[in-house]
Amino acid sequence: MRVRVVLMLVATMTIAGFVLAPVGPRAQGSAGLTGTVSSQREGPMEGVVVSARRDGSNATVSVVTDAGGRYSFPRSHVAAGRYTLTMRAVGYDLVDPGAVSVTDGATATRDLRLEPAKDLPSQLSSLEWIMSMPGTTAQKEQLAYQGLSCAYCHTYERIVKSKHDAAQMVPVISRMQTYFNDGTALGHGNRGRAALWGNRPMSVVEKTPNWGSAPKKDMAAYLATVNLSGGRSTWPYELKTLPRPAGKATRVIMTQYDMPRPDTVPHDMAVAADGTPWYGDQSRMIIGKMDPKTGQFKEWSMPPLPKGHAGGISDIDVDHEGNVWFPATPQEGDCHFGTPTRFNPKTETFETIDDPGKHCLQFTDVGPDGKVWMNNVSVMVRIDPKAFRIDGVFPFTKGPNVPQGVHVGYQVVVNSKGNAYISDFSGSYVVGVNGSNGEVSYYPTPQRPVLPRRGQFDAQDRYWFAEYGGDRITMFDTRSNTFTQYPVGLKYTTPYATSAPDRNGHVYASSNMSERILRLDPKTREVIEYQVPTDFDSKELIHDPVATRTTVWMANTRNARLLKLEPLD
Image 1 (cartoon, rainbow, N blue to C red):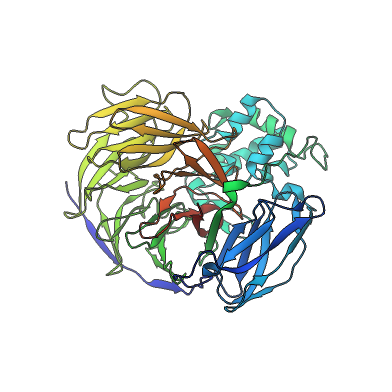
Image 2 (tube, one colour):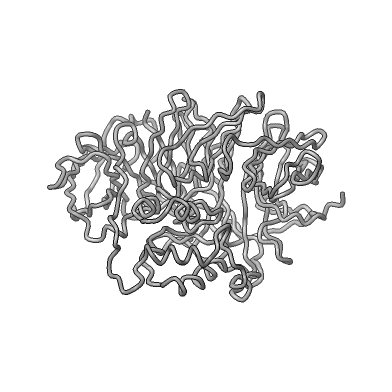
């Protein structure tokens, strides 16, 4: 196979960040800032997420109140300085407590008082909106279980606050189809970015009668019954809310680091062997990393795409030598995903492998043997990083072992034997590809359709993945070819991605519908939900390989932040 290597030198951009506290051996149990949270309605309140941000910092640290309404920030997470406090508790607003100063010599105390929310609708998650909406199960499923649903880019708040009637809603749905889903993420606080497809103008999408599997006219008619059309000033249904976290779900610390560009769309991320988080911008040709000890970001740019060409950096992973691999959108053609690319942090250069098949690849996984795998919806490509060439192309949607029907591969993952597996989003299968002979095997999920999405392998060659349309975390054991399913709780939670098990066997999953991070204990089947303090959407959850306690990193796609989750038990 002919290989073309393109070496690109790029300018770098260094952005000074400020962490809340230096990383050190100070005891987690020593409080730097504490207090109680209460309201006239409830008294002391459990499950309130309290966040602290030091003046001049790019990081916000959050904790959750216990059964007595008390919050406590470990001294290890709050260095001396002046802090602004905020909170998240649906149905409540914070009475401004003023700034609080933290010193090294004493524990700062500030009690917080909450009052009924002045604007409850603006606080609801998409899951709370769909819980509240009237409608049939079929109507709600068509809305929530779309492969590229409304919640993929923004919350349902935009739908329910709209005033379009059924006829007006059809072109609105078409207009939404003109946006590049993977490069669009619209959060609150002016963080996120909307990007248009270069090859999908309104004149093209308005001729398409469906939105995903749903006829646009049917979906438009339903949405017009749940919004503010027809002159309504309020909703003709009760607004329902999820219960606040309780018990184990309050035992957590979350830290979010603002990326230097608030319009970054960090669709994917990886963590290097030294614990450094890396990310790519799916809306621009930029990759970056953050030093977890200093909070400092550094970014590198490839040549920008031509105007109107949608794309950027897709799924990212780090190889055994510390090189960063990803598909990068090519400068020419209609492909919005990309060509195999390697970034060498030591030389700060990019190298691109010529892909004669023009496979338009999206996802990346570095296998235990060091080989790099990438995929699109129908083909996996394997790369030999030492030879710097593609050494295998594995189609998996055609052949004698492929069941009838539509098959769409999602994210490739590789087990210890060098065999690749992928979730079949449309067909609800797990697909295995033998890395030695290319043999393809299809394993149907126990229920169908469940829209299996993203996941990871554990050390026992068990593939953990999210059933987006089944509201489950599922484990496929590649040794016995058997499935074990774990319901996550409420319908329409739509878990998107799962982690591998942590040192305690817990598996984590993200939900952009509930704006919560789920933690499954496979032994007891217990699922707890950590409430994220801001709007939230994450496509990948990665364990920190050097942390002394369980630490899970993820890119908060919705608002251009890196999020670090530290469970306390």
